[in-house]
Length: 103
Image 1 (cartoon, rainbow, N blue to C red):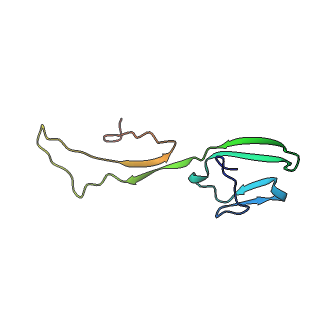
Image 2 (cartoon, rainbow, N blue to C red):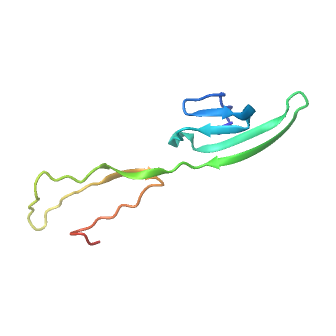
Image 3 (cartoon, one colour):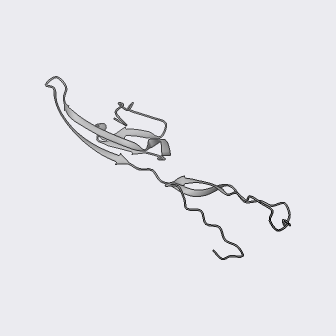
């Protein structure tokens, strides 16, 4: 089970192997995160045992939109400018700005 829903025996990036005893992801994706439940028992007797695990998937920090200036900027004192650096990652990455290599 994944987040309470029964998994098909085969998905786009996972397989259930060894008579149901192994759930293998290749490659693991962000959408795979969540709770997984393994349930075993005899349905006709109504006796089941289960175990669960939380899968957390991390995603490498990356810059989506790099800071770009087509030319050096010249602005008057008191002007307002915006430089943006859009990032993505799990957990959300920390963004630091530096000026001439210094914080």
